[in-house]
Image (cartoon, rainbow, N blue to C red; front, top):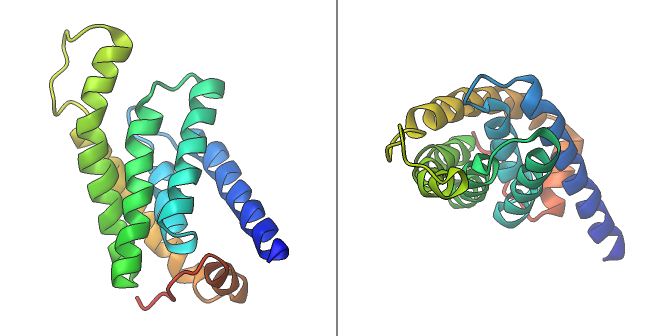
Amino acid sequence: MQKDRLQKMMMLAMMIALDVVLSPLFRIEGMAPMSSVMNVIAGVLLGPFHALVMAFFCGVIRMLLLGIPPLALTGAVFGAFFAGVFYRWTGKIYGSMIGEIIGTGIIGSLLSYPVMVWFTGSQQGMYWLIYTPRFIGATLIGSAAAYFVLTVLKQTTVFRRCQQLFGGVKINE
């Protein structure tokens, strides 16, 4: 029981570290496809709750250390949560990918507008769908990359063991 809890915390910390380190390295201006990669992997590996926790802490760390605006939170948390939920519903990587696209690409992008209006104090040059094309583009790129990573990872014993630890569903494809 205590050992499982410790292993969960270590896996969660490792996923947070990977996301914080990889997201700025493979960043396209206005897009964070590596964040989508990590959200899909976390949704499959950790499940909805722990994926949400991972995305939240990653967003806060990136905001504090890298000066990224609150978009780091509004985009990532919904995508990570829905990636986990859709994966649990379907048991397929595609489910997690669709959850990420809906959560980050649609819900996160639409919620980013009022957050950024509040954050910047200005509506000049901003409209409701300003973030949607970039967020959807990033989620499509990130989800496709996550698919290839997960197809390799699913064959490893360590990945399956970690997935079991978090009560995950085996990948059916």
